Image (tube, rainbow, N blue to C red; front, side, top):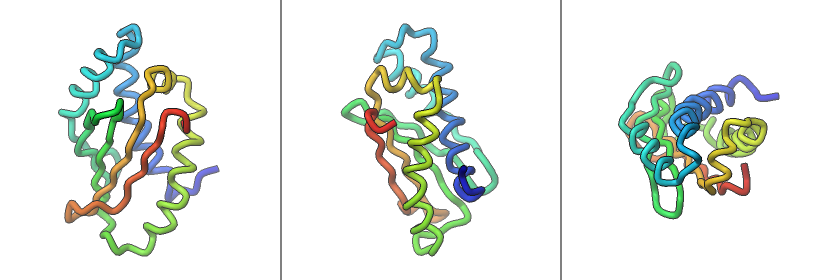
Length: 134
């Protein structure tokens, strides 16, 4: 069971995954269509939860999608970040493995990167996930 502190990070990941899988569900799991859906989704910026804003979804080289979030309540030196980073990757993997709607990502061998920035737009946490991990 996830601690409340980590639920917010899993929730924000699930929101964007839902957007992407909806856009790709009728695309016969074609990688080009998937990349087009990522490009479309990447134009959207919105508040996922209080203090958490999704600011970009980028299609990177090597079949990788990067989600960039701003955590407005944290700074690069926040002591809570050490515990969050230690537990967040495992929580993300656990959640992604339990979701049927993520299958399209695995089948297309999409690697994921979760990039978190502080309110000053400085990188505070980066979690790469290979498609074999989730």
